Image (tube, rainbow over all chains, first blue to last red; front, side):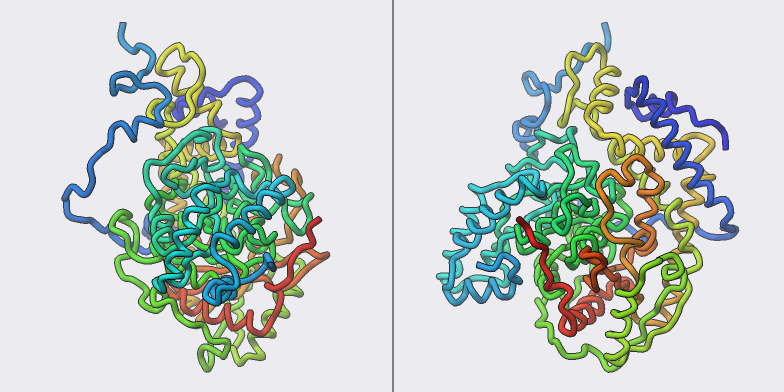
Length: 93
Length: 485
């Protein structure tokens, strides 16, 4: 099994891990993936993957509006808003 | 009043005017608040709303327009969105999150006249088997407060077991209803995937998550499930065909449900369990009732845990990408840039186990590994399901232990994620196959409860409920209660 690059993974997952936690998670992940590697021993030739436990298609409904969006209500839970906009640090100077 | 009373008895008390819904609601609120300092089963209480719901229920009862659960107090696992009440999912990320709408489960139970007294503690984002991953602190097992109640619906299980509430909702992704039910000596049902709407139930692993009930008896579970199961246009994965038997709020009969059924005993499960005396006694109960017991084999059992942790991790890493500190949820202090905002908000907002699962999923889905891990796991999932389908050609139900052991001590496994994951060996395979399954108390070991598991074919909840209820009419394990100081 190749060495897991936890720093790279944490960047992909947008989780800013630091210091001790980074090495602890490396240990955990290494242990978990060693357990997962048991899967290699199972012969799955010509086995179809199962994505939905009932092999069912998703149920679709008519494309009809059923409710109004209440902007004020939905933004009430935002960490920072101004004039109806979500405020984040400056992205472009 | 006896706090360990079943719902049908509460209904009778309400109908006979022995007490009002407002009175029993107050009774359970007071008891739950008092015991919560010891057990930490609840993250929050919603007293004001509960009293109002109870008064409305009392009016309906007085008018003669009440339904089967009008005025019954309950608790929701804190994973179900509740309009106007905080829904934390056991996470710092959602510590102050107030949902703008009710989950379908909550909405249907509110409509049926149930009274919500509070939100039950849980492992963060339902990831865990011990309730030790909650941002709001461990929940204790009422049978021994040094031990875990199981997880992730550990708050719901401990609350019901301790008589803080007669019944509670829960969710089960890989065993999160059944294992805590077993550890706390109560009954817990995970319905077939798709039987209950997932709308408003905070997503962990969308192809596995399913809502269910933890209660004092199978009859209580049947009654509550009859009020919230069934198709929902708001969840595209909910099964479109209703269970007419269940939704008719069936009267359960303590006589034998069918003349003869065959119960399968999976060899792979029994080989791995050192202490099976209680489950063996349960087997004899079924045998004496005329059931045929038959050894069966589920050969792919061993590979279920690796496959599950890849599939659930992959789905979690995708589902939890929505927590970015922008539109809702936790945001770090003074972010320097957008990237800093994302990275620190997620690092500070998520706990250790959630990060482990997100990173496992990210790894499994990353370039070059998709086929080796995610696709492979999905193929194994097919093999596991085929095992069950083949066995169900020969038997009507499967009987096995719910968990390899009784409730373990707090801290015993929390530093070893793989050992913790192995606790779910008997519940994960049926989750991967999308089958309905139920844990029922069947004995004790050193004064700690033991649960047995019944697994049924897809949408055969009726079989589980009728045979589970019949078992409980012959035994009294589900009537034992813990001594609380």
